[in-house]
Image (cartoon, rainbow, N blue to C red):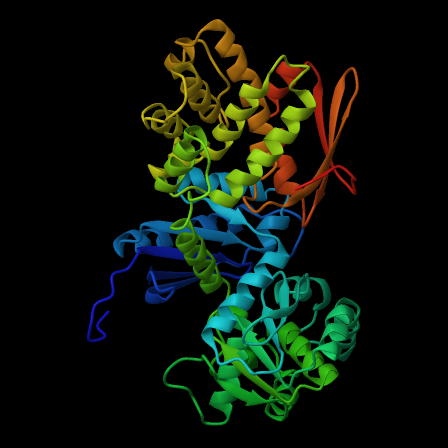
Length: 526
């Protein structure tokens, strides 16, 4: 990057938006002043919902996704990225086998995927758009059309007024409503009626915070803008950011294109080949929004979720430089210093700690544990994923090594060994006599490790998405069962799957069968 002077970057990172239709990656240098500079980009079409949203990802779709991520990782490594941030959206977070796919990517590619809820996806998109385009002084409606969901944000240059994610993405709507080519008038009418039912809340918020412009982001909106520009002989030479078209221009384009069949649509300049099949559902949505909301102008943001991921990470990185000032006592201070050095997954680790302590408070006395054990569990939860600093593979074993060799202050030696072993057993194998570091413990400390690790495994599983999806939980205990009821922000499939695949040790220490269900609860709020 040459600008007359050379800024020193904090880090080079890669951000990946794992969408329903395509995976978008961007590699950037981030700087201490809060800016970032794009080094490279890559887009891979994967069509995760090619056969519709039937609650599971097909083997073929997963294969395409894994191959795409291998290419992205190769590019990231070639460009010297120190960290890869991968965020999954609608198709993966809803899929029954989404957890299996995430685990497969860890095992085969070495990338850890975070499955975010729709509200967070909308927030990150909003941040990216605010950062990337000239925002009006009055609220604008931002619409990001994806394959599985569409995000709506009402925002000006400073604040958000409204955020939501609706399950009306073009792949989902095409699979549900479009059975003919060209699309029929009856199918258009059914789509419009469905959009109306789903967007009532958006329309009400727009009526309160009325603006004059729609800002579109992601592939469908970018393609529509390019097609209209090509049609008007105004093909952009410097990209699509800030590219504009009027509602009148769109309606004229819509009238000509909506009656086209696949072959005719495929000839349109500016339309990606893989979006030809999905275009009608997207056109009907844009037509509905422009007409219903009375919006006269549209412009495009080339920044979307992937840039929002970077902005969020950059803020966390800068905030981390101010950490530790208010931390009392050598024990906690040394743990916090260590996790920051290891580039910890802070939000996930703090949430897992809260979940683990809640479980401890319910079962600790029954298990014969005390306040020191509670403290060690909290710190083990903070440190359980720091092994990622070395590598994704065997990160639980790397965590054991780092904790035992980190010269943590204020702890007795056996306390460090207990935390290290508890962190080591948060995944994969449960404690075994043949494991050297576990074998070396005193008998009483082995029992403490089993009990604390049993709790941590469930807590970690309950944040399998790594995005704090569990908002509240309640616990019911009978002679034979422990029933945990979850209140989650979005689909709970990943969290239930994540916890239940690690239930064995917890069931051993509590001597009961674990059952986890989704539902409204009035228990602890996180």
